[in-house]
Length: 439
Ligand code: PLP
Image: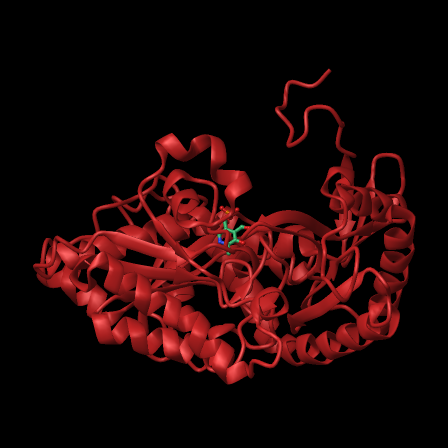
């Protein structure tokens, strides 16, 4: 009997005892390779001595200071560092406690920008059907994951959804990447025109879609076209890099690879690597100046924003990533992981797609490779894969979801940035066994 309301009430979770490097050990003594970083969180693995030392030192100095009274050296240093490394133009940082909070802040910043600049009629938020932006009400309203939204719809603010850029499912036979990118991005312009350009506040999207569809990057110059459409109609662009940011795709920010700079950028998971709950919203100077010259503050705030312990964890994690040049390991091990997945599943009758960037890769399972028909949803394949993987000492992140009426089962891999080629081989070997057992 537990007093905790667990994620699943009918199946008791295993109890984690310790974790070190890329491995967990449970209270039964079984060990697991963390091939998903939890949910793309643990970018440095577990128990990293530098992060632990930084946390101990911060705890001795200053554990908490309410930002209504004080800032802290560590929060200031983290903000300086994030701005120094961020795409040019993102000059300010708002520190929060996780991804949903970062998205909520971004949505409210976009809205306040327009109230401060004399355009209070701009209220519409546009997002994509294949997206997840968090579980709090504003983030859930913006997101396109119907399964997560359905029963809460009466509580959700109005938001509008366009098609994703999802080549495997939506690119037409014979359509070039360039043509598909234009067609998919064109959906945004159509929606803006339909709503009335001067009523649209912001467009939000994940550069590489994570939880809803499994490591789906855009094709061609999709995001450059999105940026241009936003500029044309004065709509703010919010990129949600809560999952794909902070090095996961091989560059610090995924949008660097797309060649675009958003007006607002959300980060979390890999920011603190799981050592503390922490997230951030980066904002452009234009938005900051609108607040500075308007009411003089952003009308928001949380008790734990700018938390010194969270800032210390994030700062230490980011310093280790830079010092140990871990982005180059993400690139090398990402390529190795992709090659192993290709070699293992490339000809598999039920693997329709292998995709992703860096150490953010996924396979999509289908009944038939030619028709791309989904496997029987009632069998809950993704849940069976997770169970079979755990039984083999492997943590992966399988998800099933209905996107534009098509059900896809995919398995997401997001191992820590410290993985070796041997780790990757072991991960893919265990995954292959788990998939076979689950099918
Ligand atoms: N945005 C994206 C892209 C995410 O993947 C997630 C979580 O998976 C969130 C936002 C919400 O983050 P959190 O669970 O930290 O609130």
